[in-house]
Structures are given as C-alpha cells and as structure tokens.
Length: 200
Length: 172
Image (cartoon, rainbow over all chains, first blue to last red; front, side):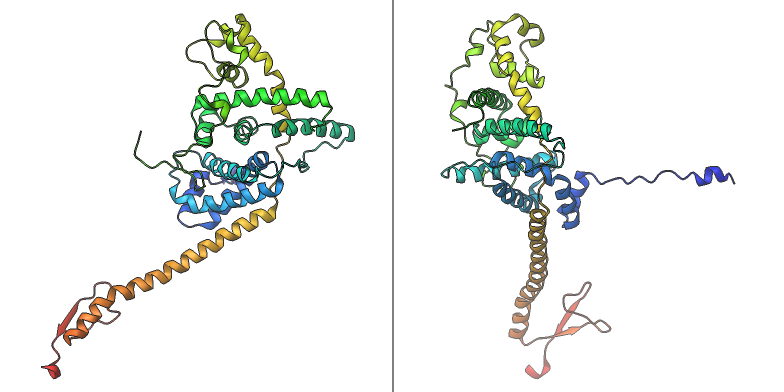
C-alpha cells in the first residue's frame, strides 16, 4: 500500500446548492431551503429597498414583506429568470409602492447606516462620508423610478435586459431612464457643490 | 403577444400594469440638447448607454462615430461626473439587513407553512368525511348494511377494499 498516496486525501470541498436547487426544494415546501435563499440574498434586497425608499425603517418593512411575498409567490416562479432578478422585482415594486404612499409626507434626510467597510482613518472617513452624503443627496433628487433603475444598474450591476424585466419596461426605456437619471445626478452634484452641501 | 401568464411577483403592481410612466419619458419629451446636433441622429440615451455601460448601438459603430461628433462627445462629457457617483455608491454597498428583520420575516414564513400544513391535514380529513356522506346516506335510506369481504378488514375507504351489500333479512 502506498501510504503516501493513501494519506493524501483530497481536500474536502463543500458544494453549496445553487439557487435553482434551493428554489426547487422551497417550492416543495422546504422552509430550510427558502431560509438559505433568504440568507444568501437578504443584503442585496435590503440595499435596493434602502436606496429606493431612502428611509431605513421603510426599507426594513419592505424587505420583510418582500421575503414573505417571495415565499407566497414561489409557486408562480417558473425559473425563466434568475431567482435574484425575480427577487429584485418584488422588492422594487414594493419599495415603489411604499414611496408612492409616502409622497404626501415631507421627505426627510436619513443618515446612511455605517457599514463595516468604513475607513478607520478619521480624515479618510470624513472624506468618504462627505462623498457619500453628496451622492445620497443627489440620489434624493431623482424620482423613485429613476432611483430604482439607477441603483439596480450602478450598484447591483443588472444588465439592461434584466432591468427591463425587473421594471417591466422596454430596454429603450431603460436607457432613457438611466440617461435622465445620470443627467439629473450630475446637475444635483453641481448644485450640492455650489451650496456647500446645503440642500435647502 | 403570448397569452401565457407572465411570471411576476405578488406585489401591488400587476404584471400587465407597467410602473408609472415618468412625465419625461413621454414620447413628446424634448430631445436632450446635447444630441440635437448629431448629424446621424443618434439618441443621447444610446450614446450614454454605450459610453457608460458599453451597450452596443445597432445602426452605427459608436466607437468610430462619437470621437468625430461634437454633439455625441458633449453627451459623453456631460456624464463624466456620474461615473464617480456610481463608484461612491458601490463603495457603500456593505449595508446589512438587521438580523431581527430576517427573523421576523422567516417567522412569518414558518407560521404560514405550519398553518398551510394544518389546513391541508384538516382539509384532507374533512374531504374524506364529506366524500363518504352520500354513500352513508344512501345505505341508510336503503336499509342496507355493509359487509366486508371475508378475511378483510380496515377502513371503508382503504386501498383495494371491495364492498358487497346484502339485504337485511329483518327488514324484508
């Protein structure tokens, strides 16, 4: 027996089930599989909700509702699209509905929660914070629909085709919406610079 | 258009109803000034999609056209700053959904699943009782009594069960 060969057992690799496999199990009623899907994608759907709603409490409500709606709607998910695209669509629609309901209230500026990746150096942190404040202030000037489109493209990296699917519009409309969003953002940044960050 | 129902999430936006159209998306919206001078009539949104996201524009090779077109160059230049903004937002991606929110959502999911299983069980039992009612009523009406085949026993709706009836001699 070649002990050297026998002892050299191959490294143990854990193959995680794909989203597709988990979806299939969840559709059969396996809540553990659904929980795994949620844990996998929870932060990305929250990010979208937060950027569209611009209000952490609303974003948390929307995310919670999106998870429950996804569970209830699994039976209608045929798997033509990626599971994440489908999730984005649920959370985006819920977030837009929430923004529509909130329109009568004054928009309040909400501080972005600090993330673990924030720079440790105080000077650098202040600089990052200022840049992020400017970006978020500019984002606030967009319509909710523009914001959703822009965030899904720029932050989440969806393709134009996926955006069209999530937002239920044509690819040409996606391009138009993104173009106008970018133009408005640039204009907002210029205004922000001119007023030194005073949005009033 | 296919009649097949479209896959859609269960939200208040029905699948056939598009999201609200922004006023500026309307067909009558004016063309952005930056593109007015493009002799090839390339829409500014296509120039922007090509410049920012590398999206191809079918009718024309924009890599050759844009450098020689002041209008399209204007579109590209006007969006320079937006790229930095995208970088900043991507840098702030690490926002985390609080664990309590996940637990609340999953708690609702587990509860819904438990209720659904319970209803399924109760529903099955109820359906079996309901299905046997007409048979029971008919037998009572005719004064028949059920006789299981010799050597067989078990519930009346068990698999492979055969029933036979015989007239009750006491009732003539």
